[in-house]
Amino acid sequence: MKLRHSMLLLLLSAATSGFSQNQKFTHADTLRGAITPQRAWWDLTYYHLKVTPNTKDSTLTGSTSITYKVLQPNQSMQVDLQQPLQISKVTQDGESLEFRRDGNAFFIDLKKKQESGNTENIEVFYSGKPRLAKNPPWDGGVQWIPDGKGNTMISTSCQGLGSSVWWPCKDHMYDEPDSMKISITVPKNMTDVSNGNLLSVVDNDDNTRTFNWAVKNPINNYGVNMNVAEYVSWKETYKGEKGELNLSYYVLPQNLEKAKEQFKQAPMMLKAFEHWFGPYPFYEDGYKLVEVPYLGMEHQSSVTYGNGYKMGYRGKDLSGTGWGLKWDFIIIHESGHEWFANNITYKDVADMWVHESFTNYSENLYTEYYFGKKAGAEYVIGTRKMIENKTPIVGIYGVNQEGSKDMYYKGGNMLHTIRQIVNDDEKWRQVLRGLNKTFYHQTVDGAQIENYVSEKSGKKLGKVFDQYLRDTRIPTLEYAFGAKGLQYRWSNVVEGFDMPVKVQIGSGKEEFISPTTGWKTMKVKEGKTLIVDPNFYVEAKEIKASL
Ligand SMILES: [Zn+2]
Image 1 (cartoon, rainbow, N blue to C red):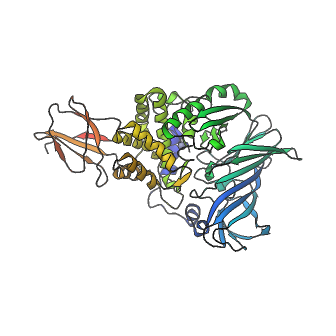
Image 2: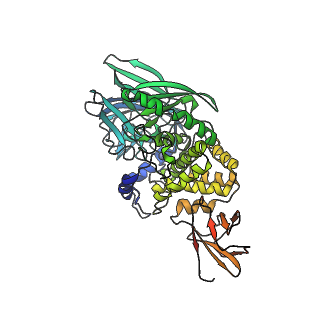
């Protein structure tokens, strides 16, 4: 997801990220956020989603065919669909099944004996008026926007909220189908762009046509999307690390010329991110940029774009350094999510930092790739002013509760700090590429990512992750110059915090010191000044009193 910004950030973050550890969660939160027994016994293998949006009354009618493998015998299956949408019928092998509604969860009684190892299928039929997106992409749902020519543009966005806001599915991130087909039926003059490759466009008798899209890779729920407009499009081929990649662009006719210029940044993005993160993860599905009426979202292989063809974030530089105006924030940030969100996907939204911290950090790496290491560092350091340090980055597990918005800027600065500790740029790049290879097309726990980075970098980073992800305090390097020399320690930190840090003492060269929470002493040759390398997201405080 895209971060909110400026006034919006200030106004909305209080309402959405001001949760506390004491927050009460409901039965509905658990049904939405836990791997319930009615979810755990079956493994998704394939979805075929068929939807016909009706612009006259803003309703959807359709079905999801769900193919799954039985892991453990069980006769009760949970499928999710949010109010006010309604499931009208569920069938298995042509037979209608009974089901019971519990809020946004449906429990289906399966008649056929479900035996371990078997592959089965159900089809869930539904209709109704889906939740309108109030402030997409942050407060999502379905948007119906008149295009001024008598048509209605339709777009979906649902991260966090969940894809069951517009189609019936297993609405938990831990499980993804191996592939998917999406069939959207629209008025004859309109085009639907969803995910993957366009297989066919079928003309129907009733002045509509059906766009059939095939996704050949695992896809997360919120990555699935429907975008309907009178699009014009063009294509190009990108020669990347895994061969030829098809790039397609879909924009409104009036923006075609602007888009052709602005979207030159898409192949530039691919070049930079393949360098840092490894091959684009969905060669088989191509890469698309699709214009939408809202800011943007990392829909898998179908990145949606609404940045107004401006550089920066709606024309602004989030870092205040000027570097953020050198590129289009939505093209770079949302596409960065193809590696961290769509390739490596959190199992639980409490670990959303795996998506947002790395993708925020990708902005720094993109800047570095084209404008040099100093520029990248200035950019990420420049974004520190937006860190709040009010609640931890990691959210609450099992109840669909994400952590604080610090997962963006603070998360990016945490990774930039870790790079300094690794102190070997090529090794660091191999860690980033290794993550995308090791966890290729997987859903993960945050702990797997933390452990991998520690192991492959050869650095003990457990306390560093604890400090930045699960605590709100900024480490403070306390130091004093006295008769014994330089004394220093970490304060304002988690127990056992022992992060090495680079400092310059007097006029000497930068060097690493290894503070702990206890005072250490070192002899200094000359000078009574200490400067902490600004690439480390820490504070420093000189203690003047004698120790
Ligand atoms: Zn994002």
